[in-house]
Image 1 (tube, rainbow, N blue to C red):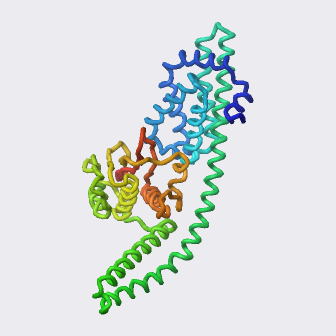
Image 2: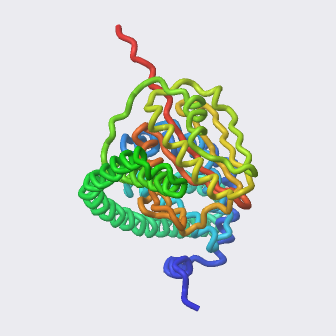
Length: 387
């Protein structure tokens, strides 16, 4: 059987059972210091403008400190297996997604190395063999961490560059044909209008086909509009935005099967935001249509909204089959779809609209079946007081 990358890296740095034993012993000594180290770590990180910008300032730090404590626990306690490797790969991908420069990874590892070495020196001051074993094992595992993260960072950065090139080509193609399609669709609409006023329209079968043609023209126009919206910067209408009102309006455009239940909680408690109600309506419509299609004829769809210190969070869940791991990494790319009759514009358009509002969307796997999307929208910035 071929050697995995993790096994190759372990062999390269000579990481073995003795190192595992030394790290577990260090974990028992360092565990009570994890919270303190997390504070030191992020206090240092936030001193750097580039890192602070990538981490969205202090808004995410409370959550990230909890995540870092979990990371340190697995770092020293193990097991250092393929699940460990996959988790570290996800961290590397996250760094690409938030555009965190690579040199901050090295700085972060150096800071953690200093903090753990301080603990080693304090507890093993008179035990040279244990001190040496702990320092060597710590150096190896931190080198492994960097190697895994940088390997994944490079892979995802190259993939991101390839996606950008595809999107550029996609934009040029859409821009060249989108407006051209409007002309024949406009002619068809005009001809339909004329035909509906002629005696032909009294024939029941003919009337039915005319209506079907009209429905397909509307669908074609919508596809063209979505394609053009993906490549152009449609101006945002910055006005007071009540998400509960937008949600209620969006529900009128989504047909729910009789066996599908829908509930929403917390929307009415959200503060008034600033944004474009029309574009946010499109966000809700696209997500709801996807959820209803995923659920089928029976199931449930729910939206849970909650305010935070600097943003509101919306969690949309459905009881459908969920999204497989290979699809998750590309689900927000244009033309990526698993639907037989879809063209893959719904989620990319949602992502674009939210990002233009200063927000974000992420897929968060659920235990068992079902999909979960987490949306964040920033609270309005308070006006600055003048002296």
